[in-house]
Length: 120
Image (cartoon, rainbow, N blue to C red):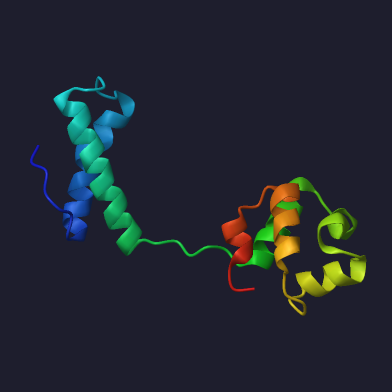
């Protein structure tokens, strides 16, 4: 297997096909196959980051999603955001998240801080 930069979609598809067998039977660490596999995965990840980047979620949508996942209501967010009226203002995007709110939401709900910082 020749290792070369991934420049086109065709190169990308070929690289995916080349590494696919290694996911079922990972090569022995330290072997030539393991080194090739690692290098190919890095090339694939770099290509995907450039051509298939995923934008971070909207901070409020991330909060709503986490609320839905955990079955939480407005009352559950009060310790992190403030009284119910403030929670409603934040969830409707009429009030921005503050740094202390972000910290408490990150700690309390486990939402990545990067997702909460966003463009709120």
